[in-house]
Amino acid sequence: MAAEVTDNKQMSRFEIHHDGELAGFAEYLRHGDVIEFTHTEVDPKFRGHGLASQLVQQALDDVRSRGFSVRPVCPMVRGFIAEHDEYKDLVSAEDRERFDL
Image (tube, rainbow, N blue to C red; front, side, top):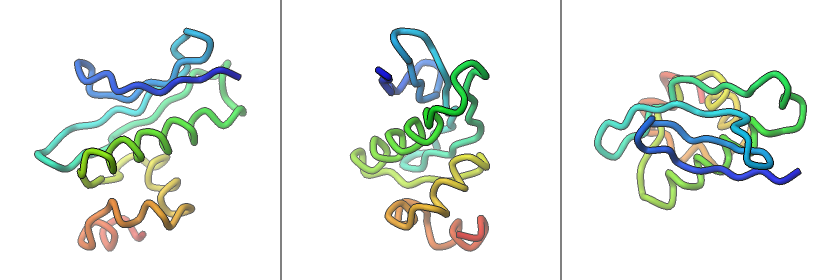
């Protein structure tokens, strides 16, 4: 399965493409150095292959590489961070309490 994640800054979303076809996206709002993830969606025909997790992981890795923090409003992003302790440091202490992380 050939999947690629890119940051489509014009549309404020990370996108995952499978064999050149848009398979899903994670929308965000940027507030200075905070990336607020608001919604994640994967096309039904691509579900069940781990693309949502791959999308979120690579988006979080990109955010980390830029020195930004994350506000996980999106349940998918929040759930991913809850299950992967290595990403909790991307969320401010205040937001960790707010989102029960």
